[in-house]
Length: 482
Image (cartoon, rainbow, N blue to C red):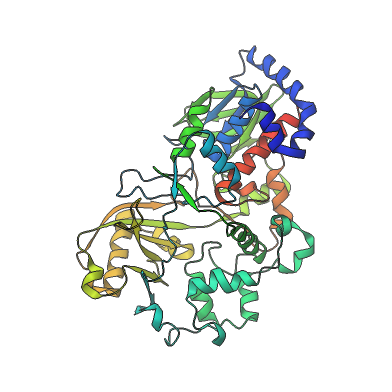
């Protein structure tokens, strides 16, 4: 991106930063002449937010050094390249309003392809299993397992979640979740649904595969409505896409575009601010110094860092208390086409620890190449208490009891838990009642010479785009506050 293009795309924020660019560049030159500093800007984390911030800062002439604890770039954008069909271990699709992500893919020549559903139920290809009973979709309305309010009994759980609950959303703009005018909605989603006539069993079914919030009691409606507002924007005309060869190709291309150091397998254990700038202390005892820094670590990882000066007040509370959504994946190959044996659709939507058992397809969108059991929330936490091998065996037994045709038809290929990854410790931030007005701004505020990014600090967008938004904001803060 040319400098004039960056300024134009950043609008008023860039105008505010403009007066600081020259000073930053002069300070950067001084930093490069100092042997004590490794870079002008030190970035912790080579996920989307860290890489994008690094790209923007390099375009303004600053020297950037990126530290990444994993042995790869991409953070929670992670393609399982060795599995059939290259399924995604992390974020799975780009919507038509993922402007930064789509622009990056175009500029970096990352090929895109139509999105392949991963956890979304596909009409005609899924049945339900509720409390151990398998139910065809066409039989759900009359099933005794269905305790939804009468006007909604004809709808599947996913249609209620993404259709009827979406209709409750009072927001018009992406910033409304932080607007005090909507404070009345800062309460558990559970309380709102109980008022709408959902009984406890219906709530249990709905939240069993909720993509936001580990349960409806600890999730504020403000967060769910913000997610729905973001999803509504993606419903505009335009395709949903993946990176054709796996979504990890995007951060890899971003990393290749950088000129500064990217030090992978370099785990940071502490960060600090001194009179000379910022310092990161690495697991091997080495220290990396710069004039300023950007920390993109998720809150559950940040809370394990030694920080000097320490976090205090609402920022400390936010880092300690912000919860993250739990997800657990078990990928299977199949040895026979079991769905042809029992006449049921290939996929199952369950209310138990199996979660969503979905057929994953190849690039052509037609051929089934493997299966994924995808658990959320407390079901994912249940699996986390087992070893990977034990969890795979447990889920296979559950599946075989639901569907006898599966006996001997599956072999586990890969188990993946975001919570058990020490570099993420969860999938994405999930906000509880009364946290947003107290913690949303606190998470973003700089501390000493450190600025903060990552999807948990995004103010408008969600997912990939939220991560990129946060990296852009952190870069602009550095440019504006030199």
